[in-house]
Length: 171
Image (cartoon, rainbow, N blue to C red; front, side, top):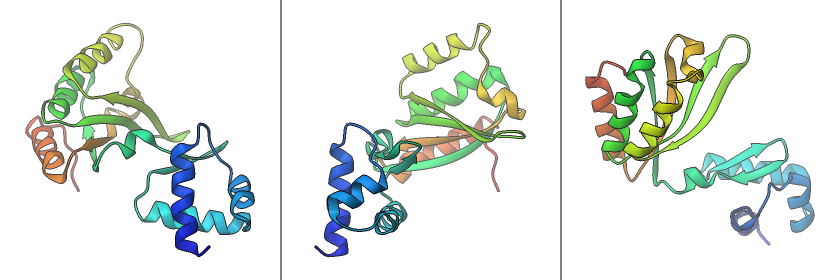
């Protein structure tokens, strides 16, 4: 089996796996070294395949796989701006996949969101009305979202609406 065929089979194996797979397990399956598998995974990830390395092994990120286009925005707002920001995303056909902040002690912290409708936004906002606080309160309101979309045009519409709200941080 050549390297490209092996990588294609690794992709299929990861897509169909019910749990994370270690590089050692994949190496055994394909009768190559663990280091070859690590290299194959790196090449696949660099090619845009949504493979994540976890402490238990490699997994396909099913959320990322569902979107033909994934873009990232950086925003800043207080807790009152959460609903407006999230509604701007879902009203334009996007899904807020996650939120990430840069924490002074822990580094990057990410929380999965999977918000794709106004109903999801209202449920999330309701949880923030009690004692629970959004992750962005730990970073002065600055946070990043990965947004899943059908295409780049959808993402650009979302970005423009976030910009109009005065929440978008740009270079």
